[in-house]
Image: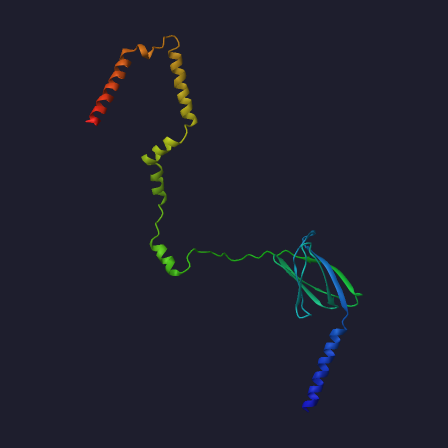
Amino acid sequence: MKHIIGILFLFITVTAFAQKQEKPLVQFTGIVHNADSSLVIVPYVNITNTNSQKTAYVTNYEGYFSFVAHEQDTLRFTCVGYAPTTVVIPANVNKSYTVQVNLKPQIINLPTFHVFPWATTDEFKKDFVAMKVADDDLEIAKKNVSKATLTALISTLARDGQEIGDANYQGLNSSIMNSHSITPNPLLNPLAWGSFINQITQGDKSRQSNGD
């Protein structure tokens, strides 16, 4: 009985293998295009033959492929960003079969993924305890209008249009007021000479004090 079962199993296996080998070989050729636009090719598409121990192929940078398969084989086309599609080679194609494969673009919304700079929970706890709490809006506003901040801005920022206009107006006003008068020469002003001599004297006294 065991010998009969073994013979039947061997016969079924040989028959199935023979049927598989009886399928003619086909040169399967084609180009992969974008289904939304036939002018756009899809390069580097994965092609899996599900009937031949999942043999895999890849199209070139122009979306072209050409390889040997069997009639009635099922080919699965997959590519990142596109929905997979399946092509079945029909029977009696006379040794070659050419096809244009159209892949439909597919948008997949992935969940939000946050990357944190802490490798362990202990590092996070340590940084959290030592973390400096940021100022609120009121504290930030107070710092922006403080005397030190405004002084620093005055010394670094250029004059605006209003300030330049006021300076020009004052200069023009002085020029008009003095247009019919003689401008005094400071070299002939005794008060100016007195102030100058006083400054020199004060400077000499300061140097003498430092020397002592």
